[in-house]
Amino acid sequence: MSNSSSITKFLLLAFADTRELQLLHFWLFLGIYLAALLGNGLIITTVACDHHLHTPMYFFLLNLSVLDLGSISTTVPKAMANSLWDNRAISYQGCVAQVFFFFFFISAEYFLLTVMAYDRYIAICKPLHYETLVGSRACVHMAAAAWGSGFLYAVLHTANTFSLPLCKGNAVDQFFCEVPQILKLSCSDTYLREAGLLVVSFCFAFGCFVFIVVSYVQILRAVLKIPSEQGRHKAFSTCLPHLAIGEGDSSPPLSGYAANDGTWKGRRHADKELPAGTAPGSRDMVDLLVAVLYSVLPPAVNPLIYSMRNKELKDALKKLIQLIFGQQQ
Image (cartoon, rainbow, N blue to C red; front, side, top):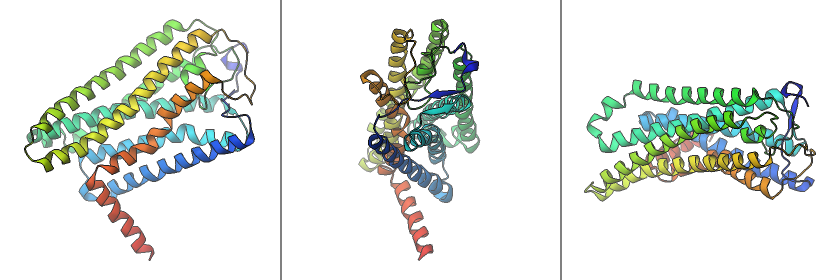
């Protein structure tokens, strides 16, 4: 293939080379996807219907659930369809769309987690100024900034990736169109462009990570000064899920992309195209597991983390479920 314009489709990585294992992968991903749909759907419905949850914290949580649904719906349904129909193909336009929406949802979610850390910091460390600093208009502006930043970040990555000439085949060593894997197909010297983009990405990610850590250090110091044990427990119950999700959502993508960048430099001269039925090797299996950790599991696990330690949300969920089943009876 002389350039990317001659590529009409990409071949995604096969999870297995036997039909039984392909179907096992389909059912496993289906279960995770349904869990993500159910968990995030319940949170969105509960927050939207219960007026007691119409607060900044739950407004941001609703946005987070929408982003989780978007991110897992970008990659998992296509992977399930490919395993079910024993097919590895994704169109060039579909791959571009997948890269764009994946970066859009993932980056917007990370920016939103930074906003949520700021919200918890103001609520606990400066409660008297909370209504002034985190009003309804400010919440909308911060959420819009997170979504807008994610959009710009996705445009930057997508434009940079697909503006490069691709001449080393069309086999992507991942179950979705992942940028480092697509860059391995480039025939031009893209090291400086990719390094520059990675530096920008890591600067944004590291800046958000430092802000989240500093915010929660200040929150921890303020919580430990609360004289009431019940007050400390309530503060921890609202902050620990944020911190757990922020750490879980940020670490795997950063480490995964760093590892993929290193393997790309070492393997960028591997000029052969993998057959469509080739199962992943040991190196590809590591990349595959890392990708599952940061792209598939968080959207399914995040609702569970929030609901386990949030009494208000659990009570609202119980009322919603009782209302639904009461109407059916």
